[in-house]
Length: 359
Image 1 (cartoon, rainbow, N blue to C red):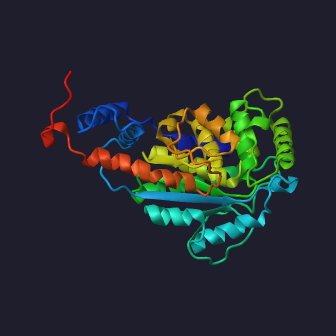
Image 2 (cartoon, rainbow, N blue to C red):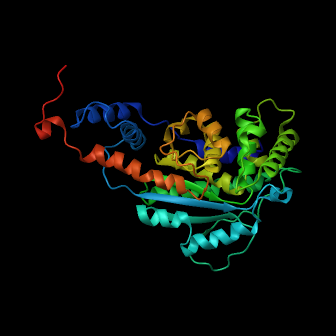
Image 3 (cartoon, one colour):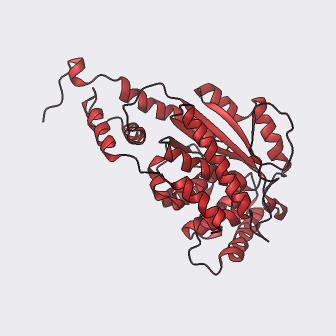
């Protein structure tokens, strides 16, 4: 790890503490007094207790929700790893800003503030309104032949994501979803998954945007070659080296945001494969981040299941999706908000005058 990156990581991980288990216990005690059979709300009770342990305060509804879509291009698309051309990243960012994508529909429906971040799209947006401009470079280098980012680019991307996380905290966000857009980024996520978990590329590499079986095989071979180039001599490469060599600028931005969210006691809802790869890197850099993360859903990408098991995260939803954009995370937010509302608004046995179960 270079001096510049080391200083950035040390600063971003400073003062992160795990969620408070005493607050979790207090939350469970309160849940057990509500007018329902013990444990009858299932995962909703777990979610409420987790949010209480993160916030370290009594919950109130409604909550402030936000989703950040980090966008960037990837040099590895030159290897034919995607069914779509790189230009689609730029085009989809414009679609987000125009309000026409799936994530726009879901964010409007569920009252989630949506932010679109240019971390490294291979295009200039000029004066397009609504875009958060944090471009580090016009895409990463082709990681099959060289590291995806240099140290300065990695540091800049991490700091940009962290700054956005601090801004979200300042705006009073309670639940924060991370999403992404970047043609080629499932190749990055597959390489990250293999490097962190030891999974074989054939098991961690999926169809991405819709590759056929033959193209998927080529993509897995590219991932295997990437791992050999960068990590053949390392039994356990460091998380920051994995990110520098194989990650996208949008993934680095999400890592920075996750670290900042944990520091400011914000619950992070991961979306699919790529955002969960960012979470895995953040947890590897600072294990105390783990308790701040909620898996919004389980993607159809095979590598996502590997990461969820590695991180011991149980997804809120399983809808056979593989869209990205933060869509699965935003779909999970009504479940999380329902858990908070039930915790905050249900009557207790004592307040309602309802008899409790016999011992």
